[in-house]
Length: 324
Ligand SMILES: O=C(O)CCC(=O)c1ccccc1C(=O)O
Ligand SMILES: [Mg+2]
Image 1: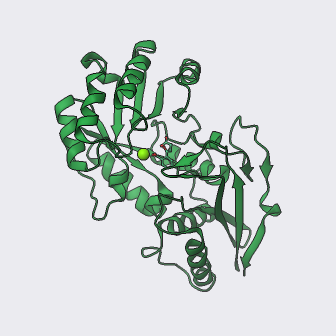
Image 2: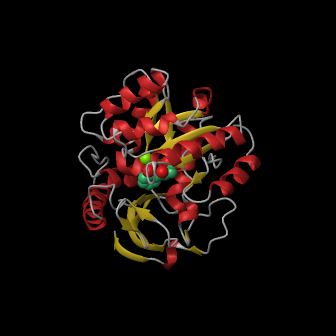
Image 3: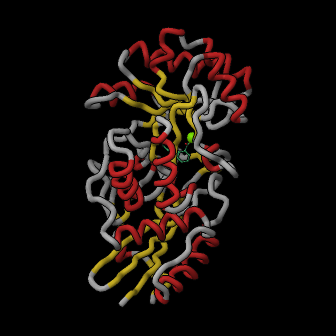
């Protein structure tokens, strides 16, 4: 006997969270709960403003329709579903089928969006591989180059993941590269999406010898995983990409040609983030995921994130907006 519930959540965010052009004061989304006999599975559907093409309302609408068919039918076709809906529902189905392993990779790449000194402290405390993620392209390219150089000099074994989110023109990207000494360029594991177009990013990598990774490009229409000079990784943000199956296909294709696949957050609540940590441990073992986004919230939801002291809202405190 199947039953399902859709909960609505709103969680307060840290005051400094800016997404592209807007401040994100509250994170909003839906949690699905699927039950079959004594089995249960949860999933989070949370379109990210400025990144997802669908709104929270559209995702909620579609989730209700698909839940309706899940109650009635054996299988539900998620191939045409909105990415956030496909991800949340497929994750709930995976958990319901007891196919999502319990063990998670909570050793995330510390994200530096503020004071570089904080990051130095966190990196020194980090066991094993010292991987950090730094946003670049927000201020002067020259400043970004100096910051990257400083990190590599301070922690010689560091593996930086820099993320320009397609902000630079070829000239700006060159200005950045000029400040990273050639002998330090290996300290950059990769630079995500340096330029406004993939072509410019490929040219940048060729000219500078700095490895790059695709993130936005993975979500471009017609994207295919292929070997390209200078490209070493693809970033997979499941909420923006789609179903668990689609994400697993991407990981498999990346591995087949020797690329690193990095599972990354789209600012899911602690419930969704925990599932991503489990998904990352399962699908990309040994690779540090990009999940250091709990610090951007002021509250957790249902599942605790390791070592996080933020107050927690239980699912039972949320409004159930649909159930069958
Ligand atoms: O990838 C990570 O390490 C953290 C997640 C992250 O950077 C991010 C999170 C939400 C939306 C966009 C981005 C981004 O890649 O810029
Ligand atoms: Mg990015």
